[in-house]
Amino acid sequence: MVVPDADVDIEQQEAYLQIVEGAALNEVVNALNALGATPQDLMSILEALRVAGALRAELEVI
Image (cartoon, rainbow, N blue to C red):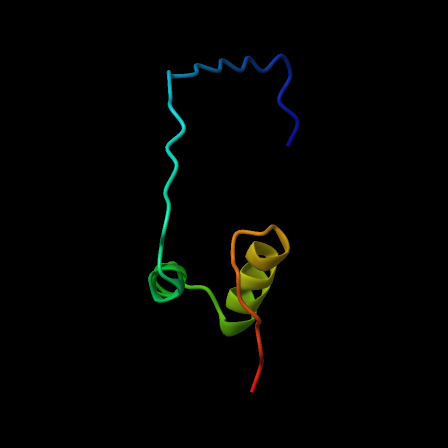
């Protein structure tokens, strides 16, 4: 479907960045599980956190 002459309006509300420190690994995993993450998703996310320096751990699949 083609929509000619579509108008798009964007409004941005004022927002603030909040830093969250010290989350325990089990809290992160529980939150991701609550969002429906699969085991493969969890490993990918944890590996990305590790590479970014946000997770100081060695990941081992057993």
